[in-house]
Image (cartoon, rainbow, N blue to C red):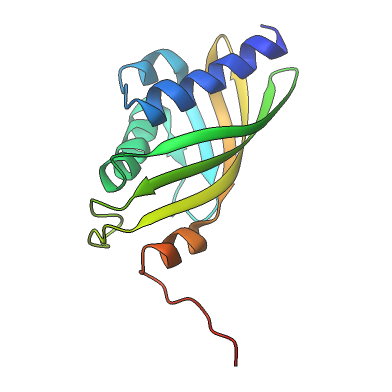
Length: 143
């Protein structure tokens, strides 16, 4: 597949799965042997079911989740995506009860695409900032 086609697959994951909550698209877009590391997550996300669980956790916590792609770069099978996500904390997130607060976070994902599916990846996002915005972690004050 071309680099533009690979970028389009990542955009579909962002638009259809993250933004629209179309979980059926995961089976088409995520390879059975998919493995990704999200820095700060307790374990790797594996396969379509693991990815589905990860998406559901955040979509339940932020039902109005909106992920926007800010930049995308592709080389061969690799696609790098810088994104911004916004949402309102209306459901439990990792044991944190809903606060009704709006939050914005940003991150970067690096994915490898093969056969029209994401096969592996690595990601990082501002988890601390997200937790501070929803009031789960205090914001440091200057002395």
